[in-house]
Image 1 (spheres, rainbow, N blue to C red):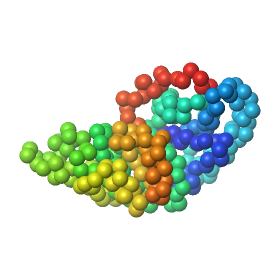
Image 2 (cartoon, rainbow, N blue to C red; image 1 turned 180 degrees about the vertical axis):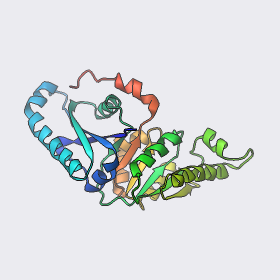
Image 3 (cartoon, helix red, strand yellow; image 1 turned 180 degrees about the horizontal axis):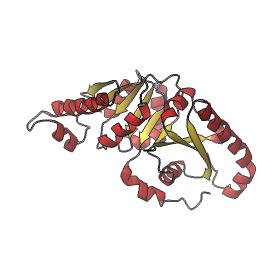
Image 4 (tube, rainbow, N blue to C red; image 1 turned 90 degrees about the vertical axis):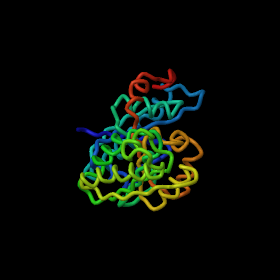
Length: 259
């Protein structure tokens, strides 16, 4: 089954993709989304006429970097006034399983995979299995106590089990699944405090983070002030596994002002 990751790049701002992320994504297909956020007064046609050649050349250089690392990548170029909406729309159009928030990283030896929030655990774990493949990349499964899916926790624990015990059972069941797939997996349960702050603390010991689209603080993590907090904590790339239910609505959404 083909797995695709969308990698948005602010191509005219000389944003690049670190060698570590390129290597990590070597097991999947990649679509590079070169985007440029337009000032309100700039028509998309004018921007394309002015910048398309330079932006396309930069995207082609990135595509060659992926090819040199043994990966497969294609690219698209968009001039837009709404970055978030563009990322969601293009991810749906190319049927991406996930998208990446780029960050500086060397070799990726260990991933932090967050299962906090009402997320599709099976979808996240399936993606991680395909991403890691047969490489020696370790995985830490992370869960903030009380922030997991009640239904999943109940399924993994006997009736009357305390919430923390249910969370531990959920983590161990997920870890067992990865181990059966040949992935070295450990678990980490944050028992108190803010789920986001706990994620920041846990991420500091890892090279990249995988999280689900419905995880707590997702939008602010990727698009708002908390993204700066992640960068300040020296976290590498964040790979966001898309929620399957978002595909139809995102595919049909356009800004009306983007090319």
